[in-house]
Length: 270
Image 1: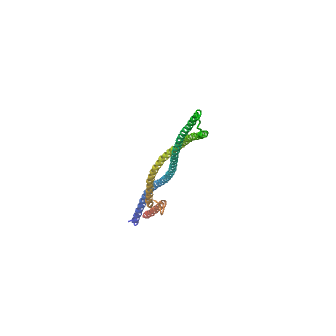
Image 2: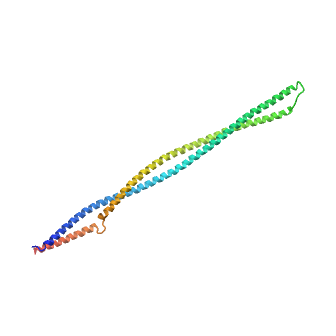
Image 3: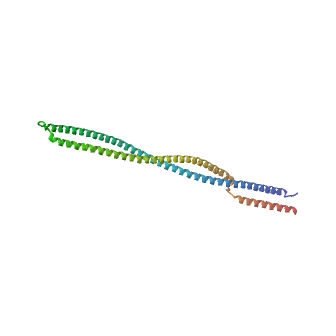
């Protein structure tokens, strides 16, 4: 009987187990290499996407804030223009009413002065004619020239007041129309600009919400990739001997057992 048969069988069984272990670890190593490489690429890509999306969200939020500020300035500008128009219109209406009353009063005064002047002239002309036929009544005839002259000066003053007021009214109306035309043009420009910025802000805000949702989903994917990496680490990331060292040491172990088995086999031949 072979005294070493039991030992040799044990050695052979160990060699088989070591080779099976080597094959199993090789398969596991291949699996880990594939999973780790894929996971690393996924984590890197998702991290890059998260950073890009975060930057894009920040950019859109800043743009929306800028548009909000610009819209507020435009609203203030429009409010100020409309206030100026309202004040100018109130002043113009009051000025127009005052000028119209002044012109009406001046015209009425001119009619009154003309009538008064005619009455005096008719009286003194009639008195002068009667003096040729009888003892004249002179009364204040010697003064009537001064009175009529004074009335003519007053008539001239009222006529000038009418003309000057009418001219001033025309100039004020023209200035008002010019002011309203200019401010209306400014209002139109600001209103159009406000409409465009409002539409742009609406688009920017909608895009921001879309980016936030995309960022949230991408962050979830990154979190899932990181969680999977944490799951892989205990089995796939070397914490002690490296895979290469384990393979080398196992091969050395197998080779030592084969040498021992060979020695025992040669001993059988003695």
